[in-house]
Length: 138
Length: 388
Ligand SMILES: [Zn+2]
Image 1 (cartoon, chains in turn brown, cyan):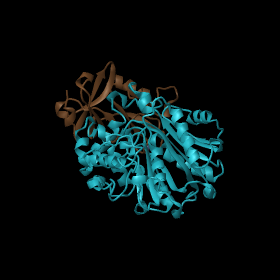
Image 2 (tube, rainbow over the protein chains, first blue to last red):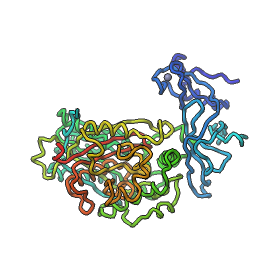
Image 3 (cartoon, helix red, strand yellow):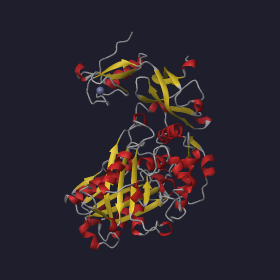
C-alpha cells in the first residue's frame, strides 16, 4: 500500500511538487491523477491549480484505470526504424484525457470508443503509462 | 456596435522574399529582404520603422535581433510567440500601438531558412525554441503531424469526414498554386495522388501536410491619415482577435472544435461583418484537416459539414468560395510559421495584384492564423477603402 501524497500547496513548499509526486508514485506502480477539493473535478497532468475552477486545492488520487480511446493514429515508419506504432488520446473514466499508447493490439485496429485498462510498463528503467483492451489484459 | 479599432490600421506595404528555396541565405537575411521590400512598397524607409513586431523559429529575442540587424531603435515591440498564429496576432497589437501613438510605422515580419538551412540535418525542421513535453514524449508522436492526425481521426469518427474530402483541400490548394508563379509546388495533383502518397500518421499522408520551404514575409502598417501618401491602394484592418486554448493536443477540449469559433466571432463583431460578407479566405492550412475545421468554426458551413463543403472543387479556382488563393501552406510555401503569408496574399488580392488568380470585385478578406497543435487561433478581417 503506497501512501498518496497531498499535492496541495497547503502541505508546504518543501516539495515534492505535484509533478515530482506523480513521478515518484508512478515509480512505485501507482498512476495518480488529481481531484479538486473545491469542485470535485479531476485533472491530468499533475498541476498546482484546478483547470476546472481555478482553485489551488488539489489532492492526488489513484486513477481507476478504466478508460476509452478518444482518438488514435498510427505513426508510420520503416521496419528498420522499429516499425509502425500507435499514439492515442485516452479518456479516463474520471474525465481527463492524456496522450498514451494502446498495446497488445495491432496499431491499426485501435478504434475510437474502444474500452481500455491501464497497464504500467517499464521502458528503459522508466515507468510509462500505456493502455490495453481489457480482454487481453496481461 | 463595431470596435474602436475598426479601420485604425492600414496595410501600406507587403512583400515576400526567398519563397521556396533560398540557397545561401539565412533567416535574418530573408527577413530583412522582405522587410526592405515591404517598406519600399509602402513608400517608406527602414529608418521610418518605430514599431517592430517580429518572430522567427530561431531567435528567442527576435525583436532585438531584428532591430539590431535592421539598424533601428523601435520604441514599441512585440515578440509574442503564438507559433504560426503570431503574425496574425500582431495585427491587434500593431493596431493598438498605432492608434495610441506608441508607434507611427509598424513592421510585422517573419522569416525562416527552414528548407535549405535544415537540409540533411535531422531534427532541424522544428523550432529549437520548442520545449519538450514530458507527458507526450514517451509516446513519440510525430509532432506536429500526429496531433493534427488525432484531430482528423476524431472528425472522421464524429462526422463521417473522409480521406477523399481531406484530399480535396490539398487538390484545391494545388490548383490555386498553379495560378501563382511564386508558389513552390505547381505540378498537377489529383485526389488519387494524395490518397496514394506516403502515410505519415493516419489518416494524414505527406500530401495532407504542408510544405517545408524557405521564405520571409513582411507587412507595413500605418494610421489611416497617411493613406493619401501611399503609393498602393490601402488595405484596412477591420477587426482581429486571438484565442488560446491549450499547448498540447491532449488538453484540447474538443478535437473537432477550435478556438477559431471564438476568435472569428470577435473579429467579425469588431468588423461589423459576417461570413456572408467575406469575398475570399486565407486560412492557415498546415494540414488538410485545418481548412475543414476553420471553414466550420469561422461560419462558412455548419460544424461537421466541412468535408462536404470542400468537395467537388468548391474551394478551388472557379468554386463557391476562394480559399488560400496563393496555394496556401500546402502548395505555395510553409517556412515554419505561415501566418504572415496569409495576410500578404489577402492584401495582394484586395489591391488587385493577384494576376491570374485574382478574385473579382473582392472587398473583404478573412485571414486566419493557427499556432502549435490547433492551440491558438487568430482571425483578422481586412477590407478595401470601400469598406470604411
Ligand atoms: Zn476545481
